[in-house]
Length: 275
Ligand code: NAI
Ligand code: 15L
Image 1 (cartoon, rainbow, N blue to C red):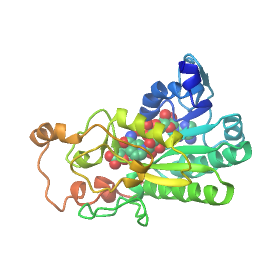
Image 2 (cartoon, protein in one colour):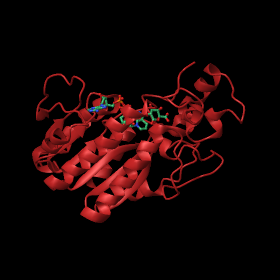
Image 3 (cartoon, protein in one colour):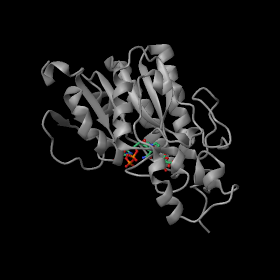
Image 4 (tube, protein in one colour):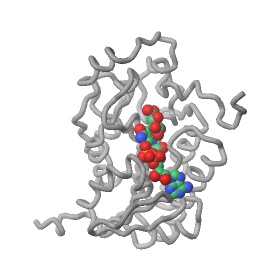
């Protein structure tokens, strides 16, 4: 089969394409689609081969409706990616998710694969192994917006039939850099593989999975991702000796290692004065 024949999608939309994970996925997704539409509010550079560059702010309802027109599926990496003033989170992650799914509903888009976060469940202690069915326990206003996003995805699946995979990503970067990430690390190749499986697995309804590599140390039961065909290859254990040698030890009550969300549980409210 020629590459063109093996591509699953006519057009895919990637939001947050200028961000860290969007940049990784911008390299991988062209293998799956005849056309990749990339979007962000930040500069995206020139269009690559078989790409459309469509700048859009997630808070712009009309813009999001136009952005989601004539696409088969969406990979949504756009939004505020950490704790922030609530007005910013509301704009990017609450209104942004709502406008995205409204655009998908109005334009008949079949599936959304999007970046939730481990911070939707960050207040679980790491002594407890959880799967993706436990009640949410957000650790920040940021995590709260991700919990909202998961509820929104469930609602749009139940009511309007849009399929969705909510990826509760752990710590996605080129390598783990602290002791917590020995459990939460997701490598870039494993991210690309997880997104691909989430796009092409049949009949996902709304599925919540953890975005995490095959780390020996783990507090997440990720059978839901395995059911999508996710077979991670990387393991943070390869970095343990280096991390233990280069980072100071932490006591068991340090939030870094006490809670699944790590330091996020101890972050102050972003709207409080920093005095
Ligand atoms: P990032 O901050 O590098 O990228 C986010 C992108 O979204 C940026 O390019 C930004 O310009 C864009 N964006 C923000 N607000 C926007 C708006 N109102 N309109 C249009 N574009 C907007 O973050 P990163 O690391 O690439 O993360 C991608 C997604 O994955 C985020 O939703 C983040 O919350 C989530 N995530 C990331 C994790 C990680 O380890 N990198 C872990 C868990 C979740
Ligand atoms: C996230 O949700 C953030 O987007 C990312 O920057 C990391 O902080 C990650 O979680 C983590 O928990 O390590």
